[in-house]
Length: 393
Image (cartoon, rainbow, N blue to C red; front, side, top):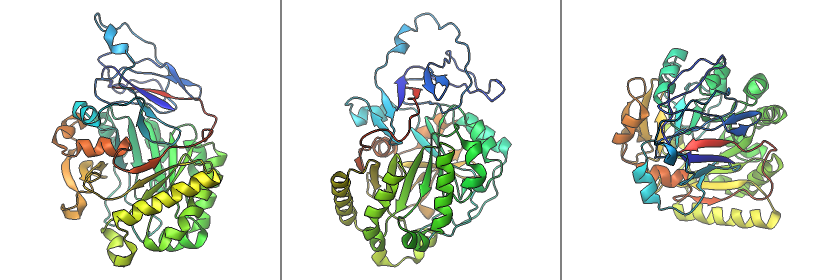
């Protein structure tokens, strides 16, 4: 698993040629292993920074006098083989969230383009793709964030996606995708992302109806697996897809996925055309999760399972960054388009935007599994990769 420590703030990352991109007030050393590469860093006292393979090794420099206390491994947060965060030891969530000066995770939309037309899709309004220069500016202003989802639209439609992934080396990179361009890009992504998160609603007929071409998705998944990319699945849950959920989890188990993430649709974009009967109540969703957890135990399925329902405790928990660099809290139930603007990552660092973000507790509660239904991964890890330790606060 990924282990995040509480130390002092990092503002350093290195490109493939060893060029320093961001400077740290304290030394950055690489001490734990991500594949063949060792990683470790000092971070500020609030749950900031991380790393992702591959990161070139750099030589440590002398630590400032009086800095001995920064190396304590207290207040740990883990990034697990189930591809989610968890606290290593019991801690008060209110204290953790109040002390944080930045998020655990953000979603960066590198495109709005997509080759599917999912029936639940909320991202139907198009924007131009951000340039690499704009993404570099956003990356610099995200320094210290442990995990970045390079999202869409469909991010694999960008022919320069591997360059973007390389740009974000030094963070835990999640890649949400429909996998349809997996054959073209899996090899170039190998060893560079923490996991790919593939949307799949279960059996062929269900996925075809809800999302898109099941066979193209599975072809891409096989390419990801052949390249050694860790895998998780996500499924949007309708009332009409409840009977498919056990098959979805069994597919996740056969694929050795780290987790299966279950998401309720929101009334935005294409989902505005869904019948009212497709939307589950929180109670119905919870009951479905409990039934699935029972089947998971009965049949020995291993993937972690996480269900996010839309309640006051999950409102606004995501920070989404648009292709224009605009950060917003999402979903904010009474906000236009469910987005509450926070500022531009082209103009200011995430620490400044964080001060205006009013859903800090919900953010940490969700990503630490406190406000959602969750069961951890069982049995052996989903791959034989060695653990990656990441600096943290």
